[in-house]
Image (tube, rainbow, N blue to C red):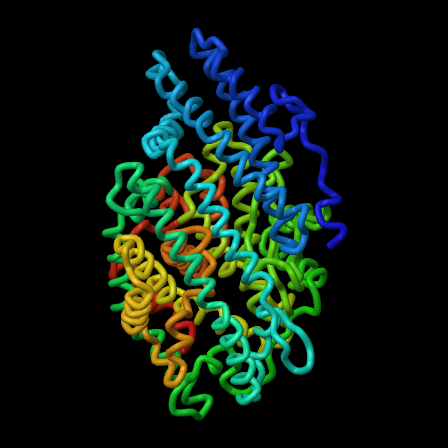
Length: 571
């Protein structure tokens, strides 16, 4: 913990931004904004130079923001780090928002815009969208939203229980769900569920405030609801809510029968009539849980070997990350839940955050975040900085695709054939089991943000209605009060609204990459890496095509992917 971020390389030489710029000082940041807005731009050459300088300024700010975010998430009890994050969202973001809008307008309204480089076209489309959505009265509301979402992170990050004679985080409690002793699993599950339930009123209150604040930002921007506003805010030019509903329907028709069949086999193998929530993670044949590593350092070392065997370039890149100390892998008290990869764009380094406790799912998480990291490294040198960030729907193809591609080398963790087969089965089952949950979360959000005047009871009723639609047959009798608030554990609902359908879309893309690799591994990996290099310079249709897939949510696209998975699982 103490060594975290201590081995970062120096920031490369800047050409415009002062080397000693303090990004927490609003006056210094505003001074640069004023210069950018006042500088004469008589010709396209001057505009291009100005754009490079503005991009360098944006990159410096992003680097600072990433470091602030990392420091507050690795230790929720660090008051200095939390204060720095609050300063960022309460003061810096609101102060800079109007200037960012003015800088965008200056670029878009330049009289020589029709002579700008052709490869700026997509970037200008993004900027135009940002300008159309910006309303100054939303700036203080956005600050309130970030502060309120942070309340959820701090609350859930600090939750602990006493179990088996010791204090444990809720993430550490997950290991008990893989124990063969069913009574132990039940006690552990109920202990965690009860602890979450104790905070239900606080969590509901946080969410209700977020709903109202977000709805107000949409109304201020001229939208009837936050759903429509948010889709445009995320630059979703390639699909609409209508396609999201198509995704829900396809999952219901194609995926749900397969998932129910898998769980029926699980119940049969476990010799129980119906599965309970604490029966879903354990080995159905009663074998001890897979334990692929002891602690984060060993997890990193073995993962590097997996990447090295898959592709030497990826192996070298991950080794570089290890050398620079940009991996925070172990779970500990006071650490925020979840996992993420964020970018240090000036140093051109990824940072991976997760909460490993020695489970097979932890290995998959690191492979997943590693895919994000390789995506960042593949696109970090694109000349238009806006394109260094791909659409999130394809970012998740990079991560989920890596989980599947790297599975061929998992003998690094599992030299025993039986354990390797168990891990592979868990992975493939998971690729299908996640799709109903994605559909559930997205359908829930579609309803929540188009019914902003909902009561708490109405929200619970709608959640349960959606749960029934995508039910896998698990028995929740006697546990309905816990099931009604199951969505409380999904941090995306609080911190990143509507950022979840991406996982479902991307899982389809990842399965396309994997299915292709079954026929030609070398060609599939080459296409995958080639698509990563494109960043956000092309639309989703072309990104999926470059990776060897198709951007489509329909039944006819989904069915062969599900059939291939089921075939590999022996159904």
